[in-house]
Amino acid sequence: MRNSALTVLAVCVILLFTAAATLGQTAEGDESARPSGSLALTASAAYPGLGQLLNGSETKAAVIGAAEAFLLARLVLEDRWTRNSYRNYAETGTAAWYNEYAEHYDRRQALIWWVAVVAIYGLIDAYVDAHLVDFDDPLPGYLDAVSIAPGPSGDELRLALSIRF
Image 1 (tube, helix red, strand yellow):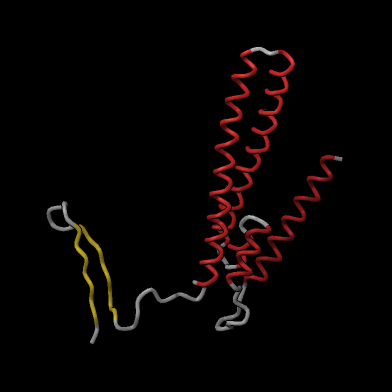
Image 2 (cartoon, rainbow, N blue to C red):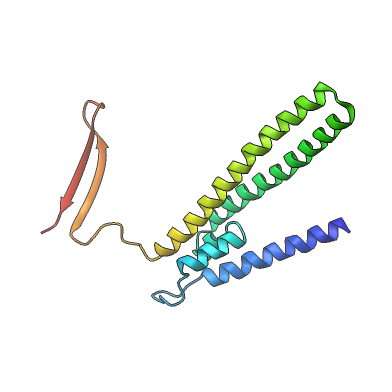
């Protein structure tokens, strides 16, 4: 029963990512097919990394999705260990179980913050990326080049800017 549920979940995740990948592909110059910021934000809120996948950033989607999945799995485990340690402490009253409970409790609290940070980063990144999808030219037409290099002594930084009139 448990293996079949995991198989169904894996198939659903694969289908979801495949559908998002096909939705994220836009024709050249087709502005109507470009994902909006709110759609990417909503997709990323529904499933970690889906907003990045809609924007065409497959690597970012995989990294954010994997990081959030790992942190959530660790959070669930720490929560289970925290509850078990507390239950054992309540039954026996020994200090060893209380110390274990306190250790797992602290880890669980830290993981809650890490999950929140990664989730908020994923949401903001999906929203901003959707607005920057067609931002290909990093320099305006009148700028020829911008370069940053170390100075001759190595203790300074030089910035060169070339402007065309």
